[in-house]
Length: 305
Ligand code: PMP
Image (cartoon, rainbow, N blue to C red; front, side, top):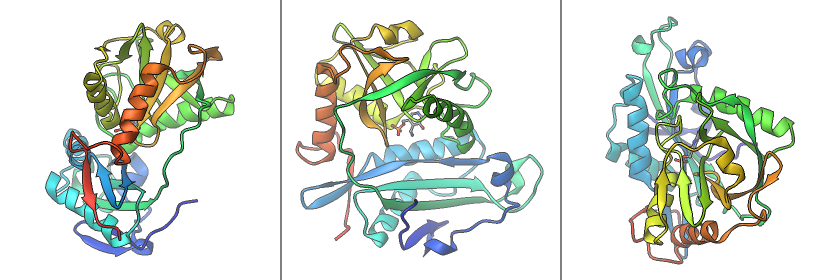
């Protein structure tokens, strides 16, 4: 169940959680006209910081731009909104959910006459303690969104109907998650995570042309890989390359860095977290947990008492 907090930010003001309601005839309810973000705030010894806040707010605006949905707030203003709501609620570590949608106005498909509503909510979300087990995943029978149908670089609510199909099928069949292939049958991503593979010490991930979200954890992991001297290849990846990878892992705000134990019940390596994944995983958590210096300025400080 959703853990509530005191306040939600709405179009420039903090309002009580229980007042953040919409009408059933709002455009978004019928046609999926929403865009959103998912962000984590981590705690460090004596401090708290929001992970890559301006980058998330830039992607939020980019999603709106693609859908001709002006948010009416700059990246700085949106970043401040997030800081305000986190500080008002005094909750960290937490998950932060900015969302914008076409609200109550017209009921025709064209969204342009319905008002844009922008909200930011947050709720407590403790530190993820990664098990050593790893995820057992499958290749989905559902493909990811085809190019020039639903734009995957927009983090739009409607894209998650595809994610829901992938995730439901995976769980019903006893897997933790599904990997979607693109319409050409090449590797794309998980229902809510980007995918990385390791073979011969080289790190591989599909490029932005493979129907993926431009994940902010993905971009952070690419940066850390370069820092660690790991060669990175962003390229189209055939399905069978997954099975012969030495290591595989998901990245995402929720998933952080989660290694894959098996894909379609084929063990990846020996099923344990391999050395390249471990190096990247440990570097990521050292930074967000304040055990190493935040050398890329990824954390925006917040005061949560
Ligand atoms: N792909 C999809 C479909 C997602 O929903 C997410 C989670 N936002 C990701 C990838 C990972 O993106 P990020 O690292 O920005 O959370």
